[in-house]
Amino acid sequence: MKREKLFLICPDCHLEQTLRNEFGQEICILTALGSVFDFSEFDYVETLHHFLHRERIAEIVLVNDVNCAFIQNVICQENRHHTKAEQELSRLKKNNVEKFASLETNGQINLLAKLNIYRQAYELLNAAFIGNEIDNRSIRISGLLCNRDKSKFEYLMLENIIERVDNQCSRIMAEDK
Image (cartoon, rainbow, N blue to C red):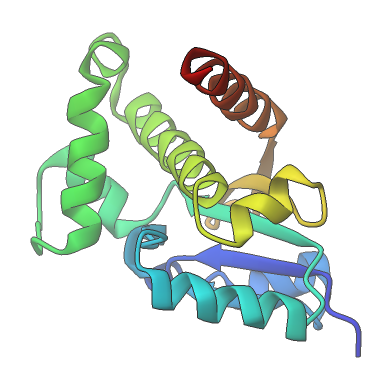
């Protein structure tokens, strides 16, 4: 049994079967509310790293659904549950407030979902063990923006994020010399 993809999703979005229908039954799925994973916790990252090797994961797919209740709650400022996911998504929106200013609600929802994917990619690149494997191209990362109501998928290219982090690291190393 060869598993090649690990999808990181929000359990509240109920995307499991949709993803299996689209990508095959043998995929792996990991969940966190609002697709907000904490890659700063060493034990969590170490466990995830072992899982990636045990299951022979070649690609991590960061998934956000535009119908995610947590993303919609942050944009519409309704039904807030004050979860860590909503706090992180709110911080992400606040840090990018100028990008949201001219957008209508649906545009803001799409933007927040994409920014969350980019944030997760950046954090994965900086995570112990896993970041090195992404840098070495042993594990790929990609983004997937979903609309579960329409069974629509938009693939997001994350190579630019990897290149930007590589360039930042090169500059920092050069400055230290």
